[in-house]
Image 1: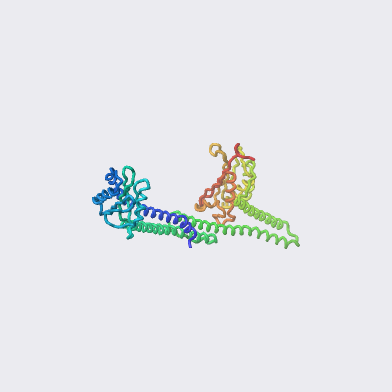
Image 2: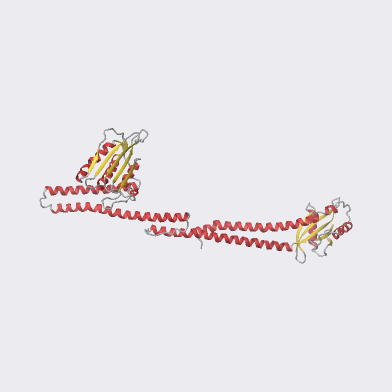
Length: 480
């Protein structure tokens, strides 16, 4: 019937609360009974305290003499309306009462013996009359100077009204406890429902998200931790939806990127096969082989990029670090891309510095991969007659222990809303230009593995500047 949070609440909290309320109610009932009974005993004890004065010089052990003096005491007793007074002889039998009521003789003897033998000289006894009326008795033993018990005085008060009061107050306490318990159960149930219902809704929503339904929404009903969790799951669904869309776009782009060179390779291969029986002129042969080699290299680059991304995602990318001249590596990359810039009618500007740069500690091929990726992007997004400027600098005063490389282009630029996302996996700000959308993500991860950074600044219609920061090799750097 109950399960989950509700069951744990009932077992851990409600049972404890019920137990505490029962203990409190029981304690209050016993406390009330104790107070009333204590008041009765105090009243009886006060009434009997005057016996010490009246019988303090009593010497004789004659029962008749005691009975006559006790009778005189009963006759002059001032509180006959509140309690009954009895005179008990030395054998424990009642010889005189202020009201004349009869009592159980055996009980009277037992009460006398209890007070006589308990060492206190008195006793409080709760009993009932022959008519069944509950009473409380106070028996005081009267002894002579020799310690002989010549008799006793017994004070009796009816506790029927007191018992009624105790029962009435106990009923009120029990009712109050039940009301408190009901309020606690009602408020607790409301509180539990306010948690269980949203959690159940969150669970259902998370299950829908897990099955690919990212459009589901959660209504925020409470401005607390549950509300924050609703917002977090809603944001997560939006992010997952965006990631799913980027993944689908990425698959589409990669499929297109792969299909284009494969189509070219297949077309030229079929052309050369069909022309195999004929003598193919050298110019056509060289052109076909050039296309096949170029597109094969392009395919290899795409596959390598995907493999690198997979290694980064699974944490399996390993750097082969060594001491190297970063200036020489950058020169080699620029030399590789210079002909491409000329062929595309773009200006690749680079002034090689004359000063000697300190060595860096890193993976030669991975750093070259970063340079190629960034400069390739700059050329890709720069129009004809545009400029891609590359600068490398190192200043001990301003750059501390880092070499700074900046690649600036005069391309279309990146919108402000896309700029924070361009280094994310699958993200591609400009869908019109070829590319898989993971090149910058891979480059950024490589720089992080080198304890460096890759930062991008851009403005629409102005161009983009990529700043690559590479730490120099220092004495405390591990160069194993």
